[in-house]
Amino acid sequence: MKLLLTSSGISNASLANALKRLVKSPIKIAFIPTAANTVNEEKSWLINDLNNCKKLGSVDIVDISALPRAIWLPRLKKANVIFVGGGDTPYLMKCVVSSGLKNELPKLLEKRVYVGISAGSMVTNKTLQASTSFIFSKKKAPEGLGMVDFYIRPHLNAPEFRVKGINEKNLKKTASRFDGDVYAIDDDSGIVVDGGKIKIVSEGSWKLYRKSEVI
Image 1 (spheres, rainbow, N blue to C red):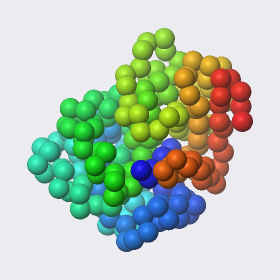
Image 2 (image 1 turned 30 degrees about the vertical axis):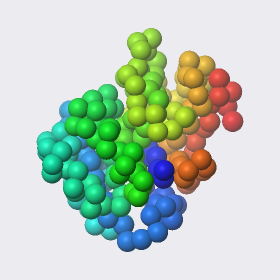
Image 3 (image 1 turned 45 degrees about the horizontal axis):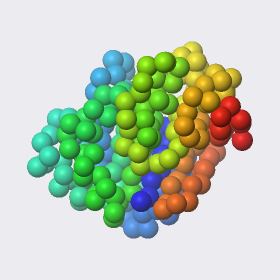
Image 4 (image 1 turned 180 degrees about the horizontal axis):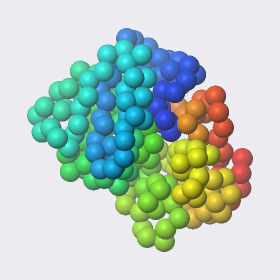
């Protein structure tokens, strides 16, 4: 399985090159914007994400919450990159399950690369504990897809998330509550998973937290 898990999509040349190395052929993206549906704010960030995708190759937009499986599945099969956008993480996970995409992903990803942005990255975790809704909460987080055995926390040091407590000090305190490593990445960083290998790709900053130990 090949994944590129990002905070803010293909935001720089290093991330673009990492994706090209994973795909090794002309890039054809199926972009799933579903997580943005319930975010009640202006969407310039979503437009930026799509523009960055367009620089890489062809882009189809496939909303799994608005289309039946008979339509979205063939369109995902035409792509060699399944690109899952950011937004509302719990809502996205519900849609991934209710649409049937969860059951289709293992087969789809035998020959395709998965790219996540923010929420699209966090749903690959074992649970959604790293999402803004649950990271500092005592509530039990919903299950994720369990595609990776670590947790990813996007938007490290981003001003709009710093006011929500997403900073290095608070992340270090809460790391002991996780049952695996926590990678906190900023908007210029990503994590490549290629089989059993994990590699950080960054033009910014990132931290690895292991039970309150910062690597």
